[in-house]
Length: 105
Ligand SMILES: [Zn+2]
Image 1: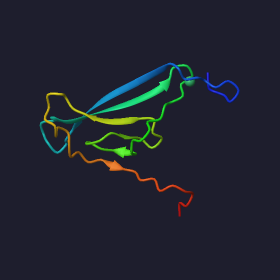
Image 2: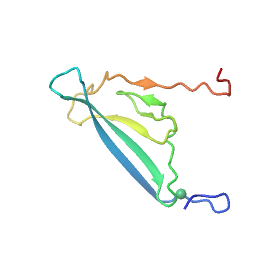
Image 3: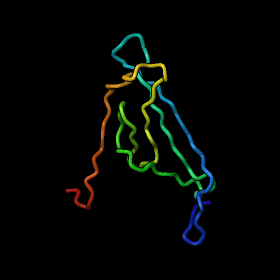
Image 4: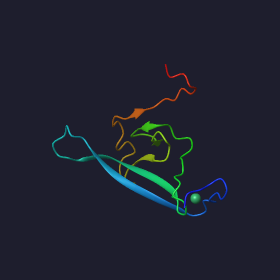
């Protein structure tokens, strides 16, 4: 059931989905895993409304959490606990800067 102004959903139960991706460097012939990233989405279990992640910058980075443009998917760089602290660092990413306002010219 979709939320409505007359009967808004209280969003009291949730569903979370996590996908873990293995990153490899195609320039290296051994196919070794060079990093991991997890993508997290959270929805209201009753009405399917997605939750937005607050405060994450839009983009993709191997060194800090980011989100997609609508902020409904958190992109989290992760590593095995036993891996060195810099594991997975340095993989190219991108950032999106919002300038605000209606001036798109
Ligand atoms: Zn809901």
